[in-house]
Length: 125
Image (cartoon, rainbow, N blue to C red; front, side, top):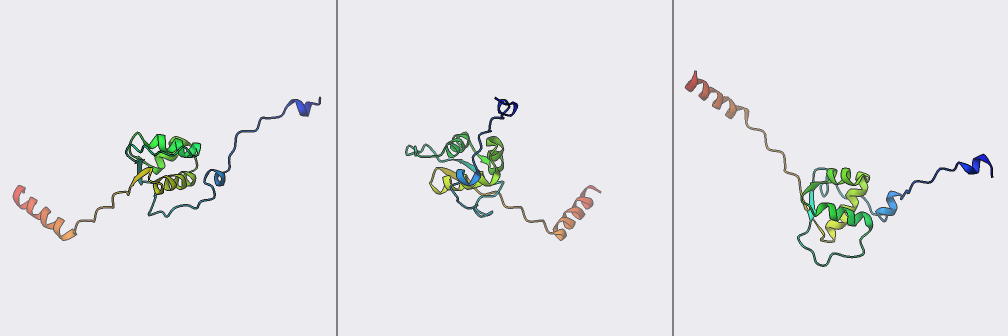
């Protein structure tokens, strides 16, 4: 036995992302953005037994309530793209409910704000 044979590091378990995602593509940003909220569908008795371990983990995590896509990726420590693909697949299968992010509010008209300010100044000096 040589010194080289005595010291062989153990290989870390590594699964390539395309194996986990089964070669599927990223969903559109509008469909599943970083701040899209996801949760498990209500009491689905037909939960499939053929989910991958990663999909099962995501479904279990999302069954606790609404989480953003970014939070799910952080909890699972999977790459964000992989999480987006798996969540999209689960949503298409009816196992997840997605809620799009709230649209940004429209800015108030400057003239209206100026009138309000003028009215407050007139009333309170």
